[in-house]
Length: 221
Image (cartoon, rainbow, N blue to C red; front, side, top):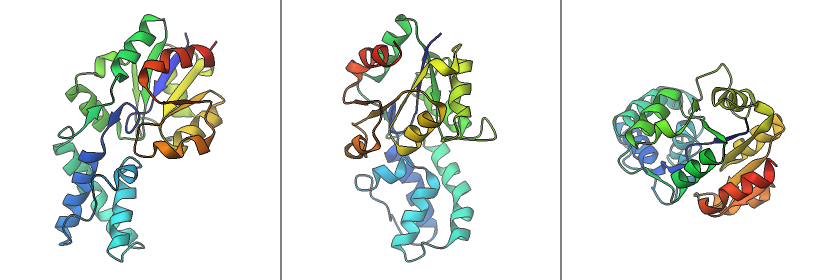
């Protein structure tokens, strides 16, 4: 079976608002107030908790404070887990495209660098977990993206041949994962860093989920 594997944050769903809220709770605990801005810093949010903490600490003149990042990372995860779907929304057309791919005979799964438990909770809260045959997170295997093995595992768990999959993502991490795996990569342009995607030279750019089934058919022909 051919499979289509999706990144989660910034690809299927805009999770930036809840991620930034969790990071700002850490900065409030430090006595600094809300250091990150939900609009301005959405792109950093989708690169993960440590990236957000690093950015905020840099603004506070503490960008090299690795101990603070290590200290507050679990605090951030706990805050995020407690309010994981307040602002998060699926991107328009995402689930319709997923269902169309499944109807066409593709296996569909998720490969994310979000911890698996948090990804599982979020997808269930959004009511979409059962649409995906597999979910591989940052801690599912000993390695994470851009190592290709999580992508391969997501394809296998979705019932597919790892050599016959495509990765849909929104970052250089996803592009590098697909390149290491030797499979096509589609990068979405509607996320916070959408304007930067063309420079990564993916196999295709996706401006609207309506176009995805045709793009996948072409790449996996």
